[in-house]
Each structure stands twice: as C-alpha cells, then as structure tokens.
Image (cartoon, helix red, strand yellow):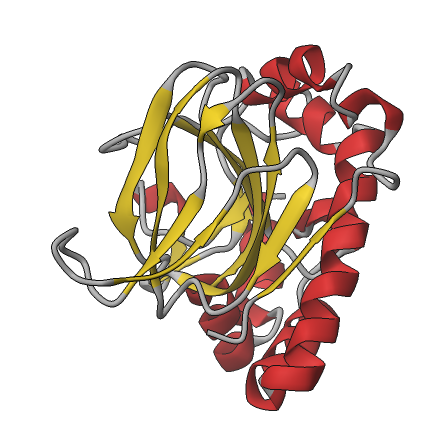
Length: 241
C-alpha cells in the first residue's frame, strides 16, 4: 500500500510525549464533535462541508464551515489553537507531502490546490488538513475494519503507554476472514501514512490508554473548493451581515 512508518518520539511536543500525553489528549477529546461509532469512540475537530441543517445551504450548496463544536468561543475552538496540536499537524503535513511526492503525484496536486484555495481558519494550524479525529478515549477497545472513503488523504499517529495489543492491521477486504496484508505494531508517536481511503484497516483490540490522532482532508471539502473556489463562502458571509 506504499505505506511509510516511523517515530516522532523525539519530536512530539512536550505535552504529547509518552509521560505527559493523557491529560492533553483527554482535554482535546472532550471538546470535539462525537459521531456515532461502531467501535472505539471518536472526537472530531475542524471544518466540514457535510450537508446538515438548511441554514448552512445557499442555492442548494452547503457551505464549508467549522463544525458545531469548533465555532469561535467554544472549547473546541480553543483546542484547535493549542500549540501542541498545531505543531503535530505541521509535522504530519510534511510527512504526507513527502509521501505523496514519492508515491502519488495526482493526489499531491489536489492537496496543494486545497491548501491554496481553502481559508486558513478552516485548516488545522494553517496546514493542508481541514480536520483531525481523535480515535479512542484512552480506554480498552478496538477499531473495526474499514476504509476512510470520505478522505482525500490522511495520516495517523498512535499514542499510548503500557499498551497490550493495539497494532494497526491492514486487510485485503472488509471481512475479517480475508487475508491480512500487514500488522504494524503499536508504538507511542508512530506515524502511518498511505491510501487509507482505499485500503481496509483496523485497530487490533487493546488494553491500556491508547489513542490516535488522524489528520485528514475531506473529499467533500476538496470538491467544493475545486468547483466553487471561495464564491459561495463569500456570498454566505455577506448574506449574514
């Protein structure tokens, strides 16, 4: 799957190193939007273009905006400004761009266009990513076999201490009876980048305070700005004045 692996243990911001990560992770997790999940709970911060309530639509087009938990003045907004989160996002951006430069020039072009078109306040720490998902609430759990089909690209960073299990598993298909392609062992600060939108993957059942930071670009966001640039966004905000 042209996946790359490594460690950021020496480069993680001090509040996310193995001895300190839990309070900060829990604080950020508590602020995000909580979508329904089949396995480990998830908390999402950042922007979206997903069709929700009609007030976010203009001429039938849903406007990209920060999700409801991340509007200015909320705890989610404050979490997005945390230096520890923006620093890791900037490191993640470098890894994704490096990976795409070597393995997927077509997606690289889309990613660079996205960063050019999308306003900075809709991207995590000014990076290419419009959102980050925290997967797992630092309790024993697992993550079901899935693909991130709504993403243009993504990268995951695993966090945890004294973890049993928790490997990232890659599969030929959705059902667990299909052959496993690869098992990437758990390690705090390890990143994994690759076509998670095309390759089935899961989180092996784990015991211990394991969490994941998953930075990504949403395909719906990319398609909106590719088609409309900032036209609808500007019209929407002018209409609100």
